[in-house]
Length: 313
Image 1 (cartoon, rainbow, N blue to C red):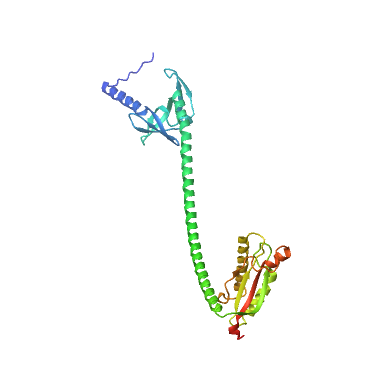
Image 2: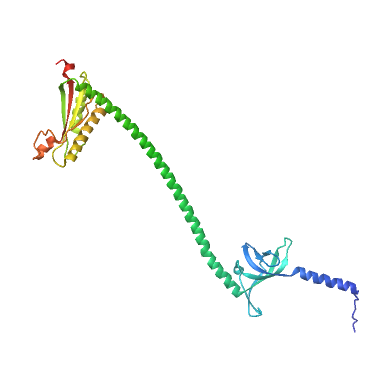
C-alpha cells in the first residue's frame, strides 16, 4: 500500500497564506452600483452614492444581462447598446492601473431599462426643439442684420439722391435767374424781328418730339448762332380735347421738351432763351371739331427773335 506523505505547515504561515488569498480575491472582484450618466466609445461613467463618478471600461468579454424575477434568478443576455444614460446598473469587475473599473458583467432590471428608454424618448424631441430654436434664432439674427444693411444702403442712396436733387435745384435756380435777367433785358427793348421759325406737331396726348422735326430744330439752332444778340422763343399749345388741366400740362411738357432739345442737341445757351410759354388751348389755329384741326393745334412754335433796336430797324 502506498504511503501518503503529509506536509506539515506551520500554523502562522497558514494564516498568512489565507490572508493573502482573501485580500487577492477582494482586490480582483468589485461590485459597483450606480446610474449611467454618460457613454463615450468603450467607456461609460456611473454616478454612485458612495464613490462619486466611476469610469467603467467595457470589453469584448463584458457580459450585459437583464435580470428578472423577485430574486433576480433569471437573466437575459443583452447587447451593449442597452446601456443608455439614465439606466441604473450593477457592475462587477476589477480596477486597472488608471483606476477604471473593467467590467466583467453589467446587470440591470428590465423595468429600469424601459424607464430609461422612456426618458430618452422624451429628451430627444426636446433636444431637437432646442436645436430648431437655435437655428431659428440664428436665421432671425441673420435676417435682422441683412435688413439693417439694406436699410443703411437705402439711407446712403437717399442721402445721395437728396444731394443730387439739391444740386439740380441750385442749377435750376441759377438758370431761372439767368432767364429772368435775359427776359427783363429784352423786354425793355420793345418789338422784335422774327428771323426764323419752326412748328413741331404732336400726336394726341403725346409730348415726345417726332424724329422728322429734329433736323429742322437743329437747322434753326445753327442759324440762331449766326445772329447777333438773338433770343429763342418757345411756346407750346394743345387741342381742346380733354380737360383744361390736362391740356395745360401737355402744352408745358411739349414746350419744355423742345427747349431741352435745343439746349442739349442744338447747343443753345439758356441765356439766349425766353422762358418757355405754356399756352394751353389758347390761340387755336384751326377748329377742334375735326381731327385735322386738332392735329394743327397740338404744336410748339419756335422762333428766332432779334430786337429791332439792335438790328437798327
